[in-house]
Length: 345
Ligand code: 1CP
Image 1 (cartoon, rainbow, N blue to C red):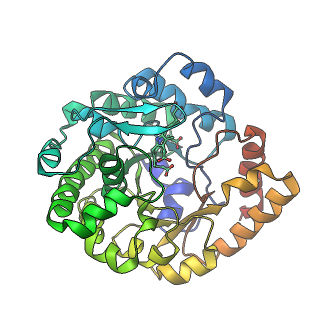
Image 2: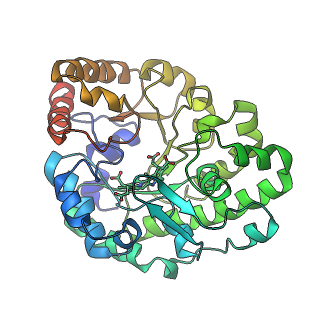
């Protein structure tokens, strides 16, 4: 990591070091809420955009230019490495990832081969260009965590209840562990190649793992997320671990080995700090829906997040989940400025 990036407020906050102001970025900060994103994506399918370095670079830079956020997040999707190893899937507009042949048996698991950096040359190329363009601003690389990837692969698409996923987890633990093992290898390889290419932090998105009870997390998920964070420990990049609806799992998400635990909007940050325990920074956690309220409400709630965030050893301001597509970009611009002003030390 270049020395300026290592001294950036974002990287310092992840490392629980003093910062000149609380750093802020937003999950899904690039995307449909930005007119400049809709313009470049107009005739380009999502997965084509994710495999085109020029488009990845442009879309990743858009929110950095517009908002002056403290970090960029690589424009991609969690299913990109699965597509790259030959899984037949697409991202359908208005739906999300859809898998042609859901994985429900050993033959399906065997289709998940190892990921080689040569499978995703466009990722390496885009990261190299981005780290030059971004200068001191950190670039966050990311991957989907094994549970969340497994859910898409087993269900065949987005799911609210994850019934088939849990049926395999409880009903055929041997198959579950085989699937999770393969996904762990792929995810670890994918995160390492992003860090090797120049990403200055990585975030593991276990978006849907909040569906699992703590004891089941410990048995069916923790061995894999732990292996991923341990496998990145030799790299000099902060590691962030995030999921939605994970109030009961916050301690376990930290135990898996991340430096920073992402918190959704359901648990206030001071309480989250107690649940996560010492030695971790927190990221979050304004309810994304607050962005639809009048500015006065956004301001009051954002100040409250900053105050409660002082209970954590390090705080990266974010939303509790992704920016909703219909968000007014003006609200995010004002929010970014407010976070910087209010937290200036
Ligand atoms: O045509 C389009 O514009 C597709 C919409 C879209 C976009 C812009 C999808 C489909 N993915 C993305 C980009 C994306 N995906 C980013 C961009 C970087 C940024 O933050 O600026 C990131 C980080 C992701 C990661 C992702 N994809 C997650 C984890 C983050 C989260 O939101 O929890 C998940 C769960 C997905 C799956 C996915 N991809 C797309 C959709 C609509 C979904 C969710 C579907 C569902 O509800 O299950």
